[in-house]
Length: 253
Length: 253
DNA sequence: ATGTGTGAAGTACTTCACAGCC
DNA sequence: GGCTGTGAAGTACTTCACACAT
Image 1 (cartoon, rainbow over the protein chains, first blue to last red):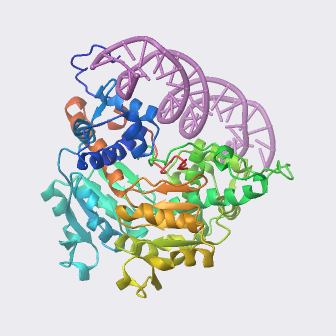
Image 2: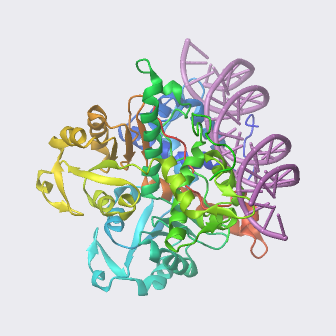
Image 3: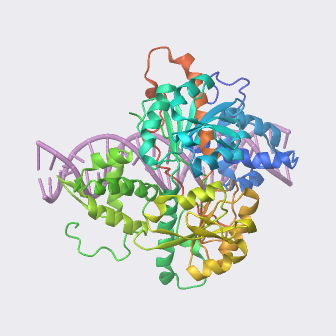
C-alpha cells in the first residue's frame, strides 16, 4: 500500500494495532533520551535495542504511522519524536485529576513523567476533610465535594483513581457523570463504566503474582536442567522486556 | 475434585499461555471476594462478570489448569481459590525487598494486597542515609550498603525497584548479583538483565499516554459520528476491561 | 552498501458452538 | 435443563526475509 501515496487517505492512520499503540510511549522515551544527547538519526536496530524490543517489530510499528524513515540511513530523531507525540495526542495539553491522595496518589502527583508529556495535574482530590488545603507536590488538595465543579471548570477528560478499592466505583461513577471519558484505575477492583469510556488499570499485586508464577517454575526446573546454563531455550516465552503490550480496555457496560 | 483422571501427566500443567497466567490473579481476586461472602459455587458466567472478562475465555483459561468445575453446576469457590493459588505459587511465602523508598516505595510498602497473597516485605532499602532506621509501614528502612546481605539472609528472589530512573540499572545489577531472579520495575527505564532473570515493568506515564491516544480518537470521531450514540460499534477494540494481558517479559541479555 | 518498508508465513490468543456430563 | 470443557474457526500480533530506495 505504501508506495507512491502523496497524501494519505484523509482518515489518517486508521486502525493502528493496540499492541503498537502500547509500544509508542516506549519508543518515545528512548527517542527523547537520544534527542537530549543530540543524536540526529537512529537505525531501527539501535532504537529497538534502546527500547527493549526487536527491530522488525519496531519497523512494522512505524510503518503503521507512515514512512518516516530513510532507507540506508535510519530515522530522524526529532522528526520521529514529533510524529509519535502527535499520534499519541501529546502535542496537546491534557488536564488530569487524581482522586485519592494517599501514598500512591502523592507519588503520582510528584511523578515528573506526566508534566513532561503533556499531562497537567489540574487537581488533587481526597475525601478526607483534614487533607483539604494541604499542598502535595505544590498543589493544594481539594475535597471530593468539589469534584464535579473541578472537572467541568478545567475540561478534564482523564481521571486517575488512587483510592481504596471500596471507594473506587463510586468515584468512577461521579467522574464519568461529570464528563470524564478515560480512567486510569489503581484500585484493585473491576470498574463498570458506560460505553465510550475507556478504563485502564494498574494492579501492583497482579504483577507480583505473575512474577511468582514464573519464579515457581524456575525452582521446579532446577531438577530437570541437568547441564550448566542455557535457561532461555527451555521456556519459549518471547524475547523482549514486555512493553506492557496490553489489550485496549474499553469496558462495554 | 476433577473427573476420572487420577494422576495427571506428571509434568503437571506445562505451557499455560502467558495471557492466561496474567488473568489468574484477576480470577483469584474475584473468587476471594466471593469466598468472603461465603458463596459456595459460581458459574463461569458469574465469575467472568465479576472479573471483567468473557465467560468462554474464563472456561478456556481454567481448562489449562485442569477440570475443576462440575457440569450443570459451576465451580466450587474454595477449591478454585486453592487451585489457582497453588498454580500461581502463592501457597508459599515470597520474601520481597523494595528498593527506593520515596512516595511510591512507601505506597508499595503500605499496600495490603501483598501480604494477603503470600508476599512478605522482607526489607525496605534506600540510598539516603537519612532514611536509615526510619520506619515505613512499620518496617525500618535499611541502607543500600546492606543490600547483598539482606538478600542472602532472607533468601529473597523477588525485588521491586522504585528508585529514580538513573539508579535503576545499578540497583538491578546488584540485586541480580546477590541472587534475585525476578524484578518488578517501576523506574522508567529498560533494564538489562542476564538470561534467566524475569523483569516486569509498570510505567505510570505509559498508561496515561495510551489513554490519551484513545481520548484523542474520540474527539476526532465526534464529527464523523452523525447519529446519536453507538460508539462501541465503530471501533473494534476488544470488549473487556483489559486484564493487563501482558507479554512475559523475559529479557534475553 | 546499507537499512527501511512490507508481503507472506508463523504463532498466540480469542471466540464460537456444541457434545457431554450432572 | 443447565453449564462445563474443548475442538474448530476466527482474529491479532510477531517474525521472517527480501525488494527497493538512498
